[in-house]
Amino acid sequence: MSKRKVYLHIGAPKTGTTYVQDRLALNARGLTGHGVHFPNKRLFADPTLFHFRAALDLLGQDWGGPSGHADGSWATMLKQVRRRSGTVIISHEILAPAPADKIARVMNDLSDSEIHVVYSARDMVRQLPAAWQESVKQGRRWTFERFLAKAEHGSPWFMKAFDLPAVLEAWGRSLPPERLHVVTVPQGRTDSNLLWKRFCTAFGVDPTWAPLDSERSNAGLGVAETELLRRLNRQLDRTTRSTASHDELIQTMLDRSELGRRRSRKVQLPPAHYAWAQGEAERWIAWAERVGVDVVGDLADLRSGEPPADLPEDPNEVRAKAITKAAVSALTVMTREAASRPDPSREIGARLKARAEQMRQR
Image (cartoon, rainbow, N blue to C red; front, side, top):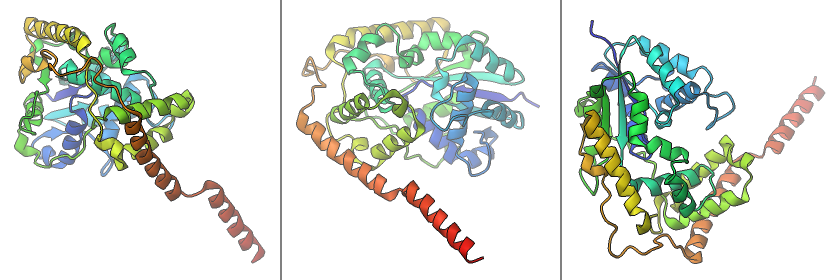
């Protein structure tokens, strides 16, 4: 019997990972018929949540849900993997900047399989605005300029996940280069399925085996919507911003209001940062060509090019009127959400009253 292949899709964040994971989940049953497995904890559960929790547990992290919600998930993932033959795909982008000891554990835990690492990469002109927005959605308070200043020194978590050579040197230390697969995110308006087809090539999957398309994406915000969230974060303490209920409420607001459908101008990289972004792209490309990793797509997709001639020095300046409009939309959704939720005190009171009535009738 041929050796099981395990494809570890480790990111990077903001490279279509949400879409790919959801499409794998939607087509999991059909893929199984072709010997391709996207493990789940149990039938009818959300496999994308299972993969997230497995990654958290592996990394020793506890966020994105109730305390302890990920405990034991990596061990459960391993059990699911070992029950299968053929191809197994494990996917979550928080794995990209994993420390050396965690990577060594993965390699040891999966030593009975042929391990492949899949890493998707995108040009920095699109990647940096997306990363800043995502950090704000997760509760950060920094301005885009402050984020960029730190990014150029490699300090934010996102930059550790985006550093293609560093990530793949760490994950590929014990693997031959042909088992390191770099999927480039295409530039411009191309075939909407092109990125998916590239992932399928990296995974060794026929795209026709997964016909159900995903409607999920981690959509970007506009400048006004992002600034509104950033200002909201400044008014909230860290404890509040780090709770699962806060994340749920913010996601509800983004899903149900215009905030999540970007009505204002998109966030753009200021022209002063293009040279650095281009330098990073050339460093990544040189490394990939020198090492000889398997490139699915075109390394030229990672180049940023020159800033548009009409791009202002500060393309993300936002007017108060736009922020007010975004705030009204957000407040409307939050008010409806609050009104739809039961009052805990009333629920408790009703239960006590009913219990007292039962006691009187005895």
